[in-house]
Image: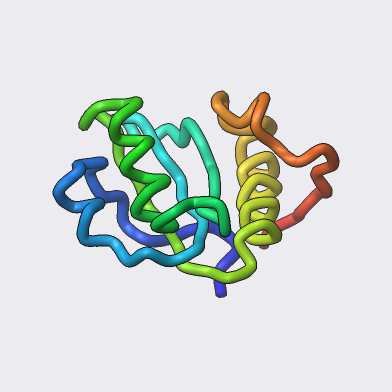
Length: 111
């Protein structure tokens, strides 16, 4: 498995999101230019997993954003890994993760 999410970006449209599986996992949301704004997860408290979490993102952002996701049962450790990879690549967390982040975030040196 790659450290970074390498799936293609999809438009953040409610109709497309409604077809997603009700699974646990992680996701990235980017603006129309492809700048990652938020890396988050759909955990055990998300009623319908990724579908619920991404529908909430669509409601908050409208359809000017895009997303990609990964189904995983280890969503907390994968979320932290994606955050660490983003910091390694960009020098900082995504803007919208400044308040929503783990208390302690390790370092990662992806190849």
